[in-house]
Image (cartoon, rainbow, N blue to C red; front, side, top):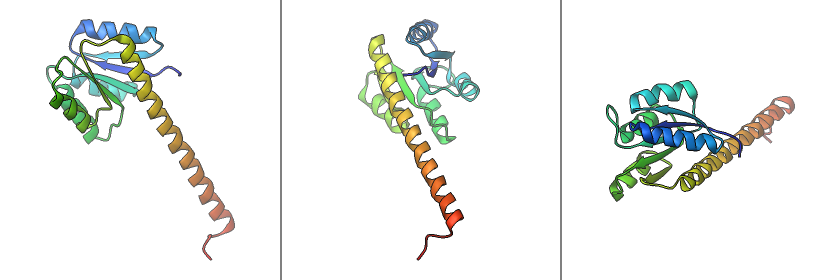
Amino acid sequence: MESARILIVDDEAGVRDLLGDALKMAGFETFVAPDGLTALTMQRKHDPELMIIDINMPKMDGFELVERMRSTGIETPVLMLSARGDRTDVTKGLRIGADDYVKKPFGLEELVLRIQAILRRTRANENQMKYCSADLFHLMKQNTKYGSMKN
């Protein structure tokens, strides 16, 4: 799997650094943001293929960040992180648009595998959309060239 741009959003510098270093070693290009407001700016600037978002952050928590992204049409895949393992948090995160949810503490191998799975699904969907668009373009071109296909 080719490299992907990942934005890590966590208010704890140690977590950001650990994840950034580990994901770079795994072949990913990483960017970090200390809070949700900064993350919105960095999302527009770097157009990441995936965002890892902590829930508990100052200024704007992870839930609000995902809700704001989805309400403005940003469909970047999201993997949420939290020390809170309450089932209501997990279901809320998934309901508002997260693609996966990992509880702290977590193993780096599991995290990398979950990232790869999300990217695999996302890239497969993007490729399918490209092929559908190409097929539609081809059909439209044929209709224009040969006239309408109506009987």
